[in-house]
Length: 585
Figure 1 (cartoon, rainbow, N blue to C red):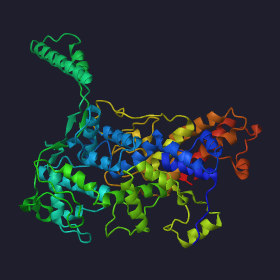
Figure 2: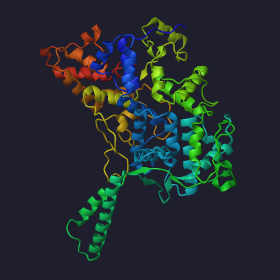
Figure 3: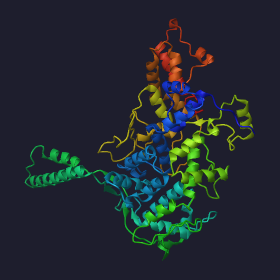
Figure 4: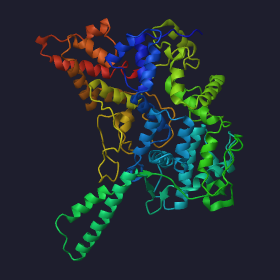
C-alpha cells in the first residue's frame, strides 16, 4: 500500500492550527503561512503555535479529560468552588512545558515536595487536587464504605491515567487477565489511605486548606482577620444588648471578604497506613494488614516501597516516574499520538493491558517513549516531532486516488497511509464560532463567575465569550455543545472521546441561538468588504469559495424582497454548520 501524497497548503495550515490550538486559522494567519517559503513554513508555524497560550489551553483540555475534571459532584449538585485552581495549574503546566515527570510527581504528591519560594509552594499545593475531583456519593452513611469507594475511584484514575491499567477490578479478586493481584491493589490503596480528602458528616464534605501567601499578602490578610474578629465581637455584644447599630453587619460582611484566604481542594497527610486485606473488597471481612507497595508482579522498578511515617505518596510519585518503570511514559506518548492523529498506536489509550488493543507499531512506541525520557519529558518537543512527520502532512482528501485506495485497503487507517480526518472536539467547535464572530476573549483564567449564594449546579447556564475550557464543568448542567458533540464524561477517565454523527447535532447547529448570533456577527464583520462572500469564506473556512459555492451563494435579487444582510447571515450560518468548518481536514 502506497501512502498518500502531501495535503495542499490550505488544508495543512488549517490542520496544524486545529490540532495544536483547537482554533481555526484567521485569514491573516493563512496569508502568513502561504507567504513563507514552502520548505520551512510548516516548521515556523508549528513553533509559533506551540509557544502560544491557545496551544496550552487546548492541550490542557485533553489532560482534563483524562483526570475527570469537573466543578461539581452529581450528588445534590454540590459545587467545587476551588477546582478551577487545578484547571489553571494544568494550563500553566502546558504553557511552561513542565517536564512530564515533574507534572506527574506534583499531581501525586506536590504538597509533600520541597518548594523554592511561595509561588512554587502554592502551585505544588494545588496540583494534588487531582485526587479530589472524583464524583463521590457524599450522602453514604456508612463512612468506612465511602472512604473505600473513594480509594477505589482514585486507584481507577491512577491506573488508567498514568499506567494504562485497569486496577479497580482487583479490589475484590486477582485481575483475571493482567498480572495485578488483589494484594497489590491493597498495597497501593494503603498509600492513598494515608491521606484524608473528606470531612465526614451526614453529608460529607471535601477538605479545603489555605494556600501559602507572599509576605506582603500574608500581613494584609492577618490584619484583616484581626479586624474581622474585633468587628464580630462588637456585633455579638450589640446583639446581646439588642442594639445593633445601622450598618455594622455590612462592615462585618466586607471584613469577611477582605480576610478571606485563597483556598484549595487538597489532600491532608494522615501518615503511614497499612490497609487490611479486605476479602471481596468488604471492610467487614478484614484480614491481616498488607504492607504498602506498588505493582510488584508487573514492574521491577528500583524505587523502594514506602516504609517511613508518611503516607507513601512521595515514594509512589518516584516509582511512577522511575527510569526503569517505562509504562508511565509509554502511556503518555500514546496519548499524545492519539491527540494528534485521532487514534493511538494502542487505540485503547486508557488500557494498555491484555484486555486492551495491541499496538500497531510496538517498536515505534518503544522508541518514542525512550526518546521522551531522554529528551527530559518535554511534551512540546514530542508534539513538534510528531506534527513535523510526513504521516501528519499526508492528504485526507477522498478525491485523491491514493487516499481512496488507502481507505479500501485499511479502513481504520491502522497503517497511516493517509491523514485521518475527524470532527473537532465540542469545545473547539464552540470556541471557533466565537473566534470567527470576533467575540472570543483572550483569557478566562481565574474563578468562574458563580455567585457566593450558589449552592448547587442544577439548572446553571454560566456562559461567557471565553474558551469553553474556562466555563464551569458542572456534572448536572453541562453546556449544550458538550452534550451534543461528545464532550468527555467528567465522572470517568476519558482518554479517547466518542465521535458520533447524529441528527441532534445538525438540529443544534441549525437552531441554537448561539450559532445564529455568531452567524449574524460574522456577516456583520464582512458586510462592508468589496466582496463580502469571498471575505466570509476566508473568515470561516480559511479558503476562497469554489465556483459552485459562489454560484450557490449569489446575492438575492432585490426585487424578490429578501434582505441582503439576512442572506449573508444565512450564508454564514450554513458555513458554521458545514463539515468543512467542524472537521480537522
